[in-house]
Each structure stands twice: as structure tokens, then as C-alpha cells.
Image 1 (cartoon, rainbow, N blue to C red):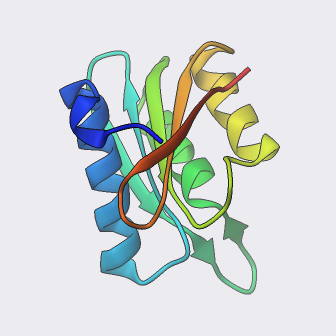
Image 2: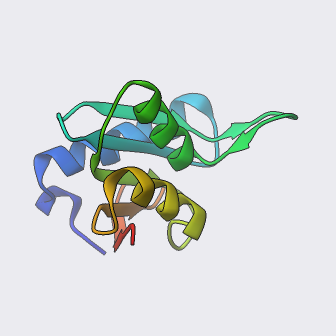
Image 3: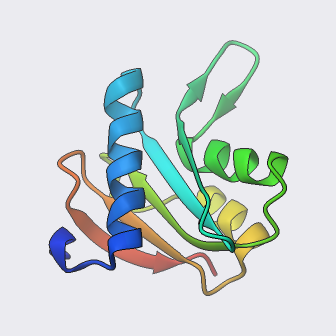
Length: 117
């Protein structure tokens, strides 16, 4: 586990935003990504009859739709042990294989940082 207070302030911000999205929307996961300009995009899980997206893939889609060219970092708040391969692939597609993905528990404590690669 990573002491969340020891994180870079910008990384701590996206973890906090991801946690807030999860709680505010009452969804299984919350996520946030930071683009190359420092803008952040926040999302929760989408679970409609006709559309199902994880929070992280939704946040990446929001970044793309807003014109982001790359990602600096991503965070997901989840009960899962890690970010799924599909989620990491979405981050990798926009940010590259070295983009860090911070995986935090529902308490906001970062349990793991993995590369998108």
C-alpha cells in the first residue's frame, strides 16, 4: 500500500476525484485521468442496458472526446485487486505503455500502481 499523503499532489487529486465520483454516483468504481495539459476527467461506472463501461474507460473516453492528446496518469477506486487488462489498454491507447495507473480501495488508499503497458 502507498501512503496517499506521500503521493504527488496531482496524483492525490485524481485519487480523490475518483473516490468522490464513486461515492456521489453510488457506482462500483470511480476513476479520473489527467491529460498532458493537467486537465482532469472524472467518471463512474456506466451500466445501462445498451452500454456498459468501466469507470476508467469512461474517463479515458471523456478525455478523448474533449481533445486530449495524451495522459499523464490515471486512477481508479475499486474493490477489485487491480485495474483490468481492458482498462489498462484504454489508458495505454491514449497515454502510452508507461502511463501509471493508481489503484485505490474504496477508502482512497492506493494499494497498487501499475503501468498501462
